[in-house]
Picture (cartoon, rainbow, N blue to C red):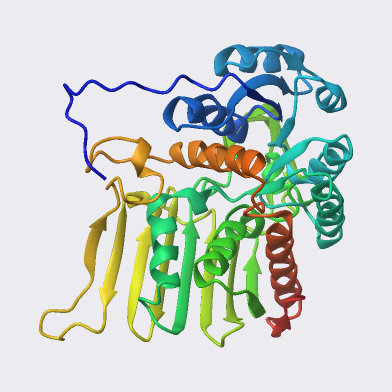
Length: 406
């Protein structure tokens, strides 16, 4: 792709006049990230329709109206059913805790709306199966249902998938995936909804493990077929939260304490359909690790490695090169020929976490308008849910090898 000189006169195409009205349920951490994506995508990429931030929904009217003003939403609702019923909403974006995903998504699909739902798809396999059934019925009517595994949209990881598809690694042998955070190391960190099974479904496993399970299967192009797991809750009681959470944490409410009902850390091994071996570690109690999602994939012809804390880089080793000069090399994934980068900055000017949501919004719009199969689909989300369920079953049975339902 030829680069434009800064002085070159360019006649840009006029922006699209048609819009895709987006209604979002939830306005906290993920709501802010998704808002950034919808607000920005149409200004960066040439899209066939322009996302319009029609309405945002939350139970606290004061808080949701403040979020609407901050993030650029035209209206605020306090009942998600009212948001779904709005004529100016064609897509419902679900950014709530997992216990409400199934109810909202199924209702939105039955109302004729497209749906984007945050990961993990649901809290149980049964809920995810019901969501897939609703998505299949909706697909026959031309609707789209997508699950929000945003890390697929990191350009370096999308490029890694291309390298694997092209056979640059050959037959895969090993997948190693870890996702380490430390925001729960302090035992006095309060009891937010992410620490309650009835709302979150699971702890580090669903919050972080869902991402690395999806990435492993996405990059390898094949599913996990069996797992063996251990998990632990290191801090079993925490201070009760006072008011709403702020980001991942919040303020404690005096001396009252509540029971933590999810895992703090889960480790498991697995086997892919081809026979390749995999290992996974998800924890929110790794002191000093802020958002350390790391992957390494080894094949018969080479290897790739990735670290989210250096997300513009991909390490690649070509094992077919002479041993005297072979080794891992750093690829700076900022060229206009790399995935998504044609619309961003000159080479070497890196992107960040928030750009994954811009890329996600771009892909959702194009999927809807161009009639593409949804990726990642609700069926992909169900497959991840089945892996998570097998991991929990294995951990509860003293690490017994547990097949993943396919």
